Length: 159
Image 1 (cartoon, rainbow, N blue to C red):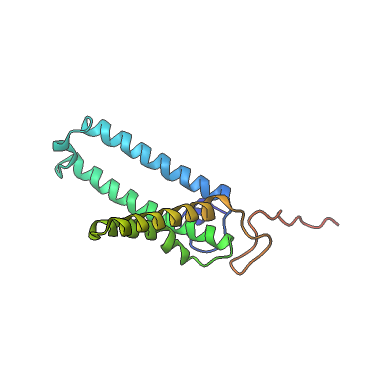
Image 2 (image 1 turned 135 degrees about the vertical axis):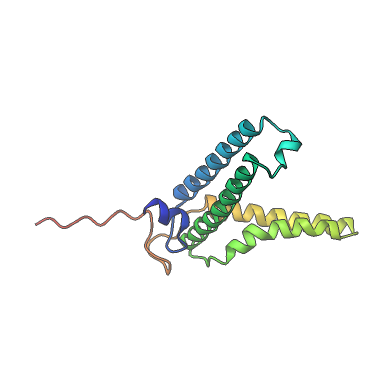
């Protein structure tokens, strides 16, 4: 599997190792961006940080490109990881957006107990998603989404 397919394609399956490699790539990309951002702007100066003039505009554009690229790639790797678990890629919507939607609804509720319950449900979904995507082994053998990524490569028959 090449890098473009690993990071940006929604087809096929990837194992846990490749999933965590993608997470490492995102972490490195964001760390490098943050270091460049703070070096360029001279630290955390709100006047420079929210400026849209000069070099700051380029940093905002780079941040937007990085955000869109990492979101697309994160969805692609998450969906392929779910495919490896023999699950539909649509589960990614629950794992990515469920916890934030449940946590965000806390501000709209006046009932403290209901707010705590929604937060707990969101936490359970986040933990479930972490275990499903990052910890559990994929389906052994082929499934409806493709061959097992951990299966040994077929060796050519020798005459």
